[in-house]
Image 1 (cartoon, one colour):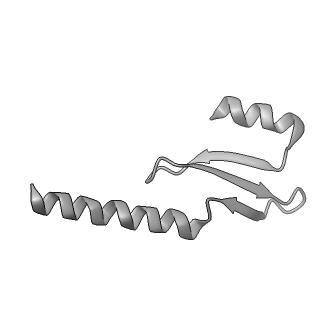
Image 2: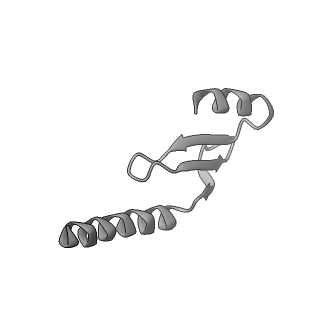
Length: 66
């Protein structure tokens, strides 16, 4: 992820790449160059929360059947 971030800095300094620790998904954020405010996030925070809840529910379901 660090290598990707370094490459992106040269042509798109307002892009930030990271990995969501709970889901393991790659997150891309577009930030305002002046304020550093997040303008857009892919996937959206709501989608990450939904993925976390689905993972949690799957864990409960499989734990119950095991």
